[in-house]
Image 1: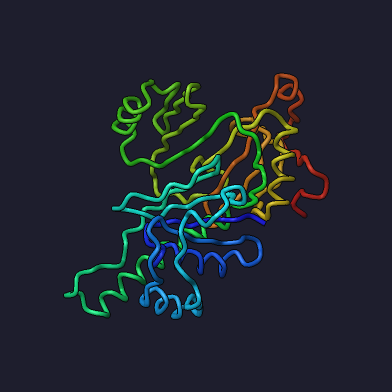
Image 2: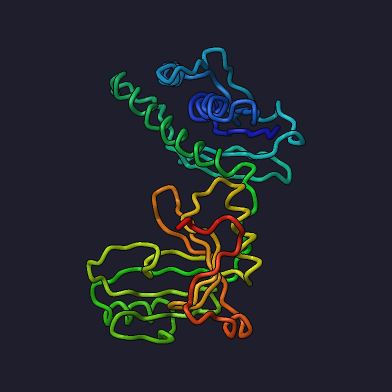
Length: 289
């Protein structure tokens, strides 16, 4: 079980809400703790807005950083924005989430406005924790050698000039429809494509991509994607039309297409069939006719 410690100064609001939210979001996968450098008491507003989500932190108490054993903590998350965050010693992984303190000594702030300040802090912490949940125990992805991105532009000449300036390099090649930048120092293959209003799909240039070493690496990426639960848009295949590649197409949660590809060797290019029919690399993955 991983142990996560949330820190702020008073351990009265942000870190207390983070502790309660983490217990709800991570369940038994994580032990959540909180502390402060100047502990006080848990804010009634924090208790109230957490109860709105069905989370009871009324039994929590503010604790000092000095009460905790650094040896048992896997991750420290500091939540201070304007204040000086507590220091927690040790060689521990750390994240800093600067969330403005919702508490205030200004007596002119109406109770409902205070509640809204606490809701805002609560919701910002919750959103960050939901991202963190997906990062814990993340399996290894495919080892990549190059990142590819293709975007549509309205004025190819102006965009080519802009990206040549930004990337410090002329495009390697260009036509009236696209310009391709190859930047070895950035491991980047970047394509500008004329925006012509045509429908975008997996056979267009508009996508993101990751270059890997060879055919075996593409198949390995497929295995990793399947184990991870990624959506496979098109299983690994060798294709000779357009740019000859071994390729695998994935789709991200928002529907964006990702190509994992490897360029063919000279020997593989020489084996191109006359009809250029794609060859599927994993048995049983070819589409049924």
